[in-house]
Image (cartoon, rainbow, N blue to C red; front, side, top):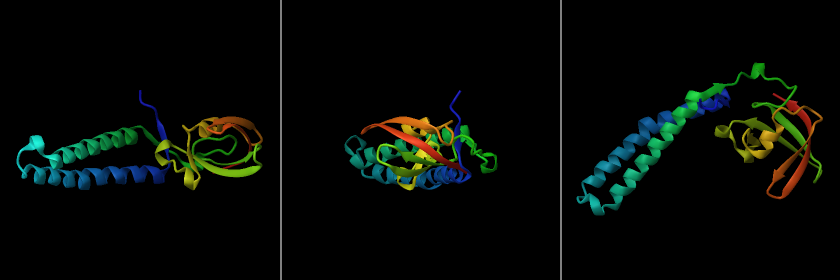
Length: 157
């Protein structure tokens, strides 16, 4: 059985829109590029044709992956989100004991992760470690710079 992926309503709609775009717009563009490349003649030495076929394969792969993701997606209901312990959808404020800095992250599915905007995946080392913790808990996370220690200072929706 495939792993369920918890996504926000916004994230689900974004994935649906991307899938629709790939199916309706990109497929047609690539089909036209393939047709145009065929018109150049000998396909055995036709780099435009090879490039278009490779792009077609990439798009079909993306479409299959998006369809799989959407099929296994569970849209989270923010009204049912608890702030007792960290789960996907929560915003978590943490204090880094090592450098005395405060950080705020929203825990999201990998499909919605954007660390530069404070959205970290439930699959990344910090996200995995935060899941299930409560306010006041201390955690240690292996990072490229070594082990970092954090304290959870707040959990919100």
